[in-house]
Length: 556
RNA sequence: UGGGAUGUCGCCAAGUCGGUAAGGCACAGGACUUUGACUCCUGCAUGCGCUGGUUCGAGUCCAGCCAUCCCAGCCA
Image 1: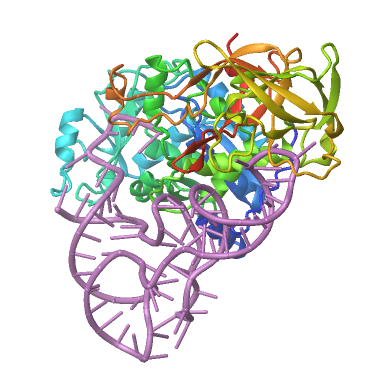
Image 2: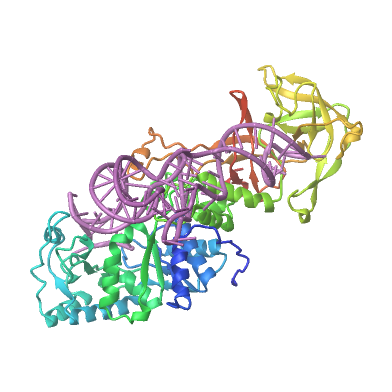
């Protein structure tokens, strides 16, 4: 895929303090181009929260010029998987509509990381520690009490070098030794209390195989990776603020050239109302089969959003409109829907969907006659052309477009009332035929032949317009409309285990709409915004205002 | 509890050297309309976590409180 230059996001006016920092760095001549990266751990699928980090990093490169790297942060072989590597790549290319400048793997830098570790040991800044995990916790102290030095902190450089090499060669069992940085066991920042740099893991790495018996920790590997790739602005979420001093410590002590030192900046990750974004929770949902998979339409993953018909540009727009700050936020999901609706309104071809059909007969229309009306594919777009919609004596309209006893200001079909069938005739309701159970069997109407696609010659105003489809035109299919689905009501990650209980309040609001009539071929993909209205408390309320893609969610 | 961060409208979010509270979403009215959509008008913080102080003047400076989030994995 070639570089996509159609990305026209207007960044002006968008609040993003990170870009202010970058702009200043560029203006000061600190860097001539920016290099950013998105460093996911391949242990799950990307979701709408990841989209924020991706978009911020990618657009920084677009805006200021430079590079955007995808880097798999695969330093823990126990948790990572090839399937996720593939899905992450696909989702990023889809979201950005272009490939990353470089696709990197943290694990490819293991050799370099090892060399830097040797340097730290030689400089007396790291040591091999034999403390057990429990002992280490004990030595570490807590918020109120300073820690104390490991008894192994004073080993000679030679001994450390020897031990570290033997760790690498696999001579020691898991957890028996670690390599630690010598910083300050009394530091108020717990991360600075002689943090572990390497741990022993006799675990096969999905990429490195059995080459390594030791694996670097995130805190050490990350700054090294950034430095190696020449990242200028390493942007991450707020929870890493406490790790920044350590990030800087490694960068400063490993011998990185001053002009090539990367810097970390933190921003608040996005939270969205009624949406679960915790990766651990999502993994759990998939593993326990609460959902059908990572792209289940109920999931907040990019693959699920794509399946539902969300477009990458709408998601990017959402991220930018939500803004970038350091405030713990909770963005209204209606903003996402707004972004998608706005785009769809301009670009989507219209199709008619009669979700709850009731039969309507035009009594004064010839039995065997059919005609076709040209209906605009998109009134917003003159170039979208028209399509022909078949008209006949027998039609369907939506149940919500008819009221026997119309509430105030109802201007769709009522007994004795007139309404426009969109794109075709004006009809008048003459009679309603009921089923034995009182439900509507069919509505009998007459049409005004003078109004085919035009306004009535007598000048009378027809207030209401109603969607319709001919009985013989549309195939009847059953669809499962996953409306609202990725807004599952789950309070938070902690309580999620409760909601796995079938009796708890994890409820997906899926509406099964049977016998709906749609103006499309089976399997055809389209997007629509469903606007339903119901009368309540003296006014009309919107029922649905959600975007749905039918192709993948329809079940024959 | 020690440290690190953050607190401006229901939700996001701008607010430069202090000068008299942008914008978006949502919501509410109204106009227009062969999608009750879209579009277009209108309304929506005497108030900026709280309390004091400095000042002619403070969201912006100072002090002290309060609230929320993050850190005590050989996770990232």
